Amino acid sequence: MTWEDAWREGRTRWDAGAPAPALEELIASERLPGGLALVTGAGRGYDAFALAKAGWRVTGLDLAPTAADAFAAERAKSGVAADQARIALGDFFTWKPAQPFDVIWDYTFLCALPLGQRHRWGARMNELLAEGGVLATLVFPMVHPEAGYTGPPWPLFPDDVAAVLPGWTRIHEAEPARSHPGRESKERLALWQR
Image 1 (tube, helix red, strand yellow):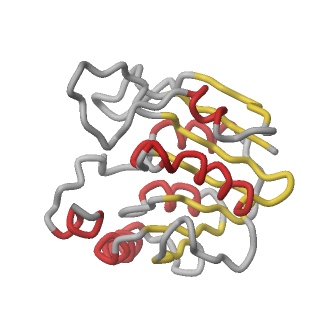
Image 2 (cartoon, helix red, strand yellow):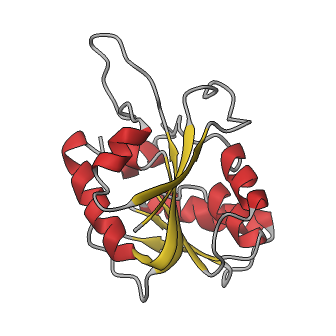
Image 3 (tube, helix red, strand yellow):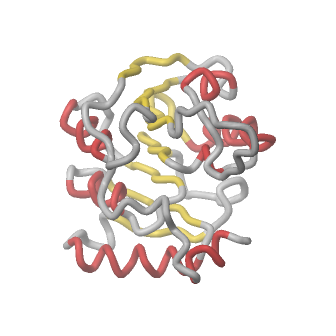
């Protein structure tokens, strides 16, 4: 199965239909620098549009053309202008943005990568984040699965993220006050800087 197959066939159980409540809390906390934001694995764009409505110029990145189409359709419904939130179609590991980002939001992206690619994700964040920027991760799913579990998503904990960000500082970590239904106690917000 490819991500495009999943989108075309409607097998997108990760799509919660709204921005992550933890992201909305984070935006309200004013812990993030302004400027350019990247949302990895943007899908329909709910998180990208939440950031755009709060003043960031946002790029959503996705690999699947059907996801990019869904992003554009959802943006039209959201009232967010195309110059405030755009979709880029490409492979996270090879995509070349015009400039680095002040904020990167990762939720349900790192946990979807094969475990052997997590270090590549960390190296890529070094390239994509601007000096002084913040990498915001909503770490999910924090579970200890039973034998026979198959992902994605693959279990992920804050220390797993720290392990692939050598030399970075965890500047904030907290359990979100709110989560999408069914994800309660399985998420942790962690902010990182180089």
